Image 1 (spheres, rainbow, N blue to C red):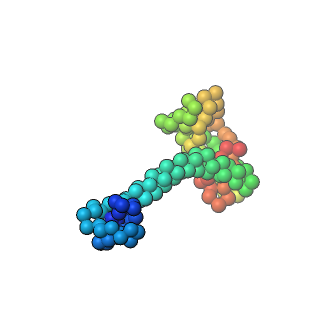
Image 2 (cartoon, rainbow, N blue to C red; image 1 turned 135 degrees about the vertical axis):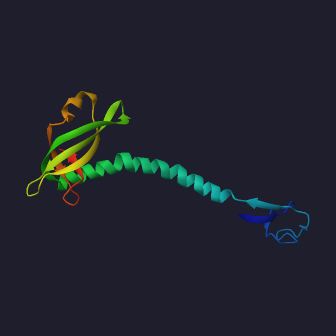
Image 3 (cartoon, one colour; image 1 turned 30 degrees about the vertical axis):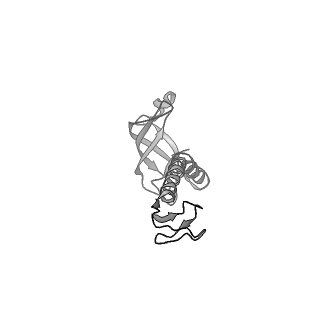
Length: 149
């Protein structure tokens, strides 16, 4: 918080302990101190106003798209059998998000389980039932990171 005395004659900002105005020389004995916390509050508001939307854009638009592009270029081809499929409470454009347990198989490795969430169009819900198999792309650096091919 910044403390200052504002001269009533010329509106010059003076230090908190000034007795005379630096601009016009008027006595500042009975001039009240003004406090300003405006810049700090403004900075916080700007950070929140810009940061929150950027976080959501990154989390739901840019981040998944970058992951998909990366796996399309670098992913290992494999297959996944759906062991379990549960609907979460999330909907995107009236399409449910489905949390699945997959048994992933890639060449040269033992099959392993992965938990995978994705939004499924209503017309495709029959395709994500236990027992169904899908082609997947697997991240060579993180085998838990998969996408349907």
